[in-house]
Length: 386
Image 1 (cartoon, rainbow, N blue to C red):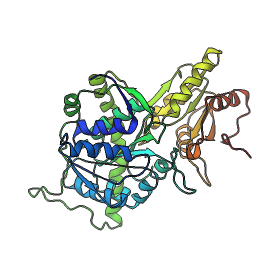
Image 2: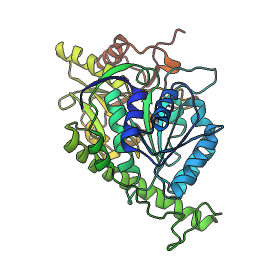
Image 3: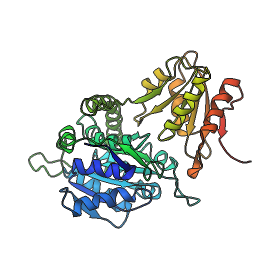
Image 4: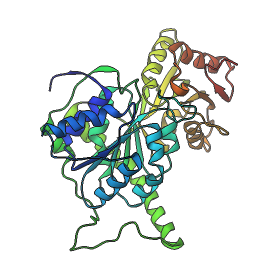
């Protein structure tokens, strides 16, 4: 297909159209609304066969999606911020029932104070609920992640729900150039949804969502842990298969000019693009710096992160959420990866971009300069006027 000028929300909706899920249940919330509005247009125009359900709340949306997926229907939804928070009761239930629901999350700051701009506080609040989580740097990746998500979540070795994260307004509303795939290629790549244990298979009856005593609760949680581990290998395989049909190559952990880097910065989402431009500037000045983005955030790609960060002198970890009373979640994950590493690099936590505060290239440059000069503190709030 020809290149498109399209915003991130519409790109996700286009991927959904090409996949043509069985069910979509959603409630509008900024900056996600365009996804379900645009997809509902496809439904109304008869361009997909999806049953679109307009529910009364985000909690109802995910409840319906969990039931729909349990019954054997490929099921999509989308939300952001307070909508994801309103779903919270259902998030661990959806994963525990092993229903591979596909959810697009337009990342937006959690209230309060009330804010509608981008940070990652919504995703970070949900990071341990048993959902696979992948992040996009740009609109192209938002589309590509949406296409790959069902192949990852629905794999019989995984059978877990997945969140495709896209930075609110920065990507959801920004128009960028994107190369979509042919719809036939997408349908073939994604394939049919074949649930492992469909609720409505009367020949092989199963029970979902029942009371679990301590012994079985523990076992079922452990099975989810094992499924998450399998998701690492499955995601790698899906990335490789996607390259064959698109020519676009993705990795669990993206690295930029890291081979000989002495200092690297770790970021999630759209900030990775800004960080890469800063790396280019400093490289032109002879500084050995690089950038890293864990595209797959849950499950945490521990071995791949260790390979990316091993042998460095310093690592700055940028968290785009407010870790009130603790270090940032991404920082903590990185520290866990490095804890047993011989000659582990020094690690510094930078909190930035809260509530949509601008993260400038000059700010990112200062992070590298602080590390190289030995001025970096362990814990930093970037851009705060004290």
